[in-house]
Image (tube, one colour):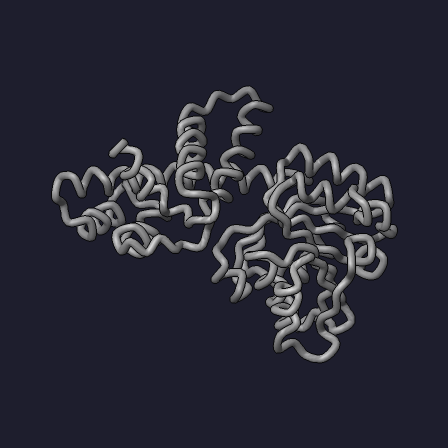
Amino acid sequence: MADQGIEVGFIGLGMMGLPMARSLVARGFRVLGCDPSEAARAAVAEGAPAGAVAFAPDPAAVAARADVVVLMLPNSRVVAQVMEGPGGLLAALRPGTLVIDMSSSEPGETRRLAALIEARGAALVDAPVSGSVAKATTGTLAIMVGGEDAAFAKAEPVLKGMGEKIIRTGAVGSAHAMKALNNFVYAAGLLATAEALRMGSALGLDLGILTDVMNASSGRNIATETKSRQEIISGRYAGGFQLGLMRKDLDTAGSISDQTGIEAPSLALCRGLWAEAVEALGPGVDNTEIHRFLGIRASR
């Protein structure tokens, strides 16, 4: 259990942030939440011990009170608004404060904000997560962390309140870069799996057996293991990660390709197909619906 004296500011109580904040409370931390959604605020407080949850009206009020502040926001644009906009976090940061950016942010923007935070005598680590809402709920996320040793030492107990596998990745910005590249590889595997299932279906193959063959052979990947039978063949399409979030991570990987000058044709293919899928199905559907989109696309 955490030291009951530690209060963690938590900005962003969305689909992932809400269960992550609740996980911290379950492990003995006090949480100072900040989110415009009244329903999200009520959900964090529901069932919490007396005094374990409080709320701040804006990010500046979080900075004035909490020594550790977690950001779980949709993208770098929103992170910048929370940091630098009216009532923002940056101007109110006190020396010694630690900001943990767990959002899916762009590495270059993360480094820019880290420099601004350092100029105020505070520190930032980037700590994006891998795992579904289910893992956030149970506090078993995998968390990548970029930052200096002292900042990591301060962040580690808080991160362990939300995840079970903590992987240090290097300097600030490296974790956001590695998450984007990892998710590109996942998207490529999911796309290949969906295409193989489509072709197998057209041949009249037993897709369950095809999945068993892939999982016992060189085609095995996380999509064949955890998405093929469970989400795609079943038609459930509820793997826990939105199509729009997948596109966002692919776009971040694309910015890395541009910055490094490394040509990545398979990444370009994935970005194009996911952009088409989001336009056709909307960003809120599950990312496994890339399989359904391929069927729609073939029928045009």
